[in-house]
Image 1 (cartoon, rainbow, N blue to C red):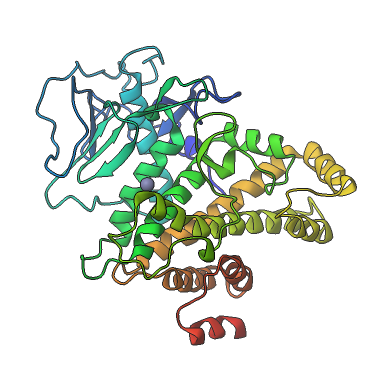
Image 2 (cartoon, rainbow, N blue to C red; image 1 turned 60 degrees about the horizontal axis):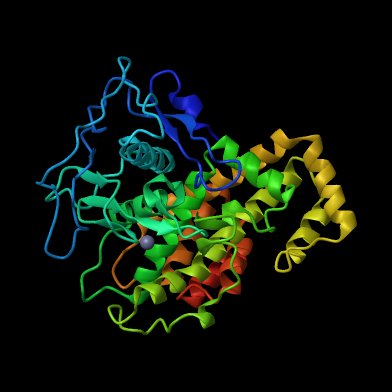
Length: 416
Ligand SMILES: [Zn+2]
């Protein structure tokens, strides 16, 4: 059921080398060769194509409310593709590597979501800017997606050393996620903007990052090896934007509910960035829980674990501990057929990605509520697979304090 982007694009696509996770993390020190959908030979120096281009400015400050791309100042020479059109010859110690890495990562994220959507994503800013400008480094301790651009600074690791965000796939995918969400959900007016829309944007971008990372085989294997098949155990997959082995920007497998975050009646522009990020966390947690449920569903369907063991894994989800007998049983099953566990995880990833992409594409950005998003996810899921998952999806959201706005709509899904 699941698909491999590398298999899709190996014959005709363009090669890049990407760090699957922060290179500070054990097991991810070396970049992995991947293929993006751009036909080999189609990318220009930078890299660049008809939709985005990387530039390496000299002495640039971050864009602000007064400034917009294209960057007009001094810049370094653009890296060129090799004679076959690929970019994997640019080594990690090459000063141009961050720019190339940024382009490759954003292109990979677009490949993932354009596959789920079944067509190209058209930038929301294309009324004024045809292409997305990618800037891999500005002197700043943050990263942002703005009107026609993405630009990245750096963050300190545990030793206090500045590490560029442009080499962190999660951060890249999160910012690309903002672009995807703006482009497919749309932009509310100042009058129709809600604080929930802002929280949803952060959450959806984290979900884009989480599902995009799962398109690397090495990452999937690493996650499953680390948790021995039990996704409820804290792992790299649920830690988004990892800066080190123990620090991350946000946690997907969190235990937050809407009662732990600011009121949804907060005027949208009164909420701070920190409050908005936290507001998105219950939704991210619900989506993570649905991913874990789809995964368990596949494990049981493939007879890799019994329905009883899957239920006990669910029951222990919050404590992250299984009794020794169950943990051994799961570890044995995993060791016996790791490829099947990975296939189950990839199936779950694509089941979720297909539903989220289609639900978000149909969402109305005006007067957004989490309840409306839930109703759309339920509707899309029902169209794709009938009544099978509706109760589970509703429960995952309900645990976070999210219900459909219209009780009648929720009830209708109960009946089918
Ligand atoms: Zn963000």
